[in-house]
Length: 250
Image (cartoon, rainbow, N blue to C red; front, side, top):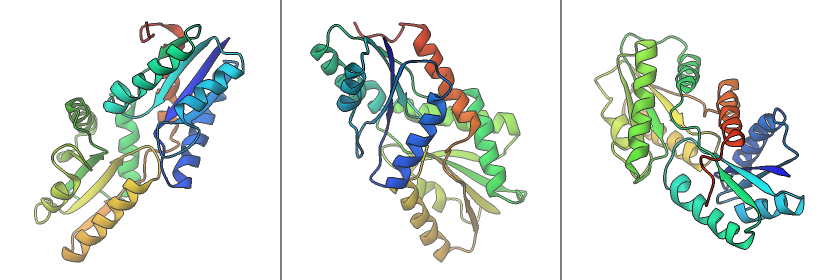
C-alpha cells in the first residue's frame, strides 16, 4: 500500500507549525493515495521517525517522502536522507522513494511578483528589492536563490533585485539592507520563507532598527504561505515522486 510522508521544516512557533500543516493538507486533498502523513524535521512533532512509523502501522509498503522545503540545502541532501537510511534499515521490506524540494521552479517567479506588488502599493522609480533566503553553507543554495532572483528580474524587468541571506551565505540581509541607504527610493524586502517563524520575526526587528537610523521607506512582504501557485508546485513534486523511482534509496 502506498503512503505519502510530507516533511516540513518545523518551528517553535505554533502559528508556523499550523500554517505548514494546513498548507500540506490542501495538497493532500488532491492526491489519491491511501496513507498521507505530515511530520517535521526539527522543532516540532511528530518527528520523521514517528511519521514514518505511523505510515507503516497503517499498512504502508511503499513510502514516498516529500520534503516541503524550498531549496536543496544540507537538510535535503544530508539530514533527511540520513534519517531515511536509518529507518529503511529498520524496515527493509518497505520501499522508500525520496522526492525533491520546491527548488528553482519558473512559477515561483510569478508568486514572488505577486508578493512584491501587494506589499508595495505603488512601486517607486528606483526600488531595491531584497530576496532574503534562510541561507546555508551549501553553495547550491546561494546559486539557486540568485537564479530565482534573476528569473523575477527577467520576467518583470525589475532593475534592482538582490539575493541575500539570514545565515551561512553572503551577502547577509543586514549588510544588503544597510547598503541600500541613499542609493534607492525605497526597499522592498521579500522573505523567501514558507511560513511564520522566528526568522521572519528577526527580520522585522532588523528592519525596525534600520528605520530608526534612516528615513528610507522599507516594505516587508508576507511569507510565501498558502498561495495556489505554491500548491501547484508542490503537487508537481508529489506527482513526479509517485510516478518515478529516480530518487529511490537502494
